[in-house]
Image (cartoon, rainbow, N blue to C red; front, side, top):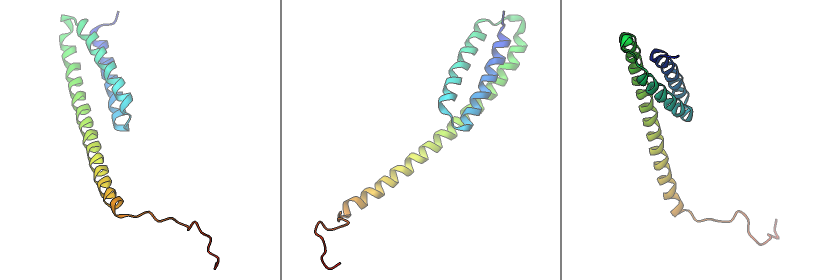
Length: 116
């Protein structure tokens, strides 16, 4: 039967894969792994044993550090996305200004030019 330390180890492994997914830009995979990590941590909490408190403490501190890395990477990605959206909005506003001043002219006349 698995104990809480094993579940914490699995959660650490899943968290490291989650961080790798975030760094690679695979948000959907990172989200799936985050849910898996949460389930593993819930299982570990339910199965905790009082005689392994020191082992759990050390692993939970590692998980806390990993969570900090995940949070900082997520914030960086959020900031990048926000800046990209701002740039797109400014570009759209710039192009909208041209749209009101441009008159569409046909590339060719509908009449055939007899001189050519």
